[in-house]
Amino acid sequence: MTGWRPHAMGVLDAISAQRRDLDDPLALQAQLLLAAEGRSVRFGDLVAATALPVVARAHALHLIWHRQLGADLGEPLRDASEVWPGAGVRR
Image 1 (cartoon, rainbow, N blue to C red):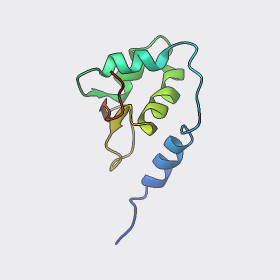
Image 2 (image 1 turned 90 degrees about the horizontal axis):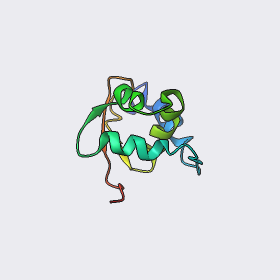
Image 3 (image 1 turned 135 degrees about the vertical axis):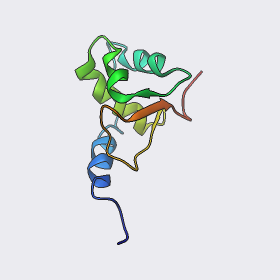
């Protein structure tokens, strides 16, 4: 069997929806980047480290899309998925 794994299109759809500009008046993206700084962390733990975890999920997807955070998209993105500082992190 060739082609994409069954979950891949769903993950890409969810992440690609975050490619547009996303206002961040609560500074959740800075909180997410700080929580992942210099290490790998589980997605669920990352968003839980912010002031508003439910809203932070959308911002985390936005950061993954913009390569501010990295994730292995060979598997479904879940709370147990590891994320890390991405190649596009501004220092």
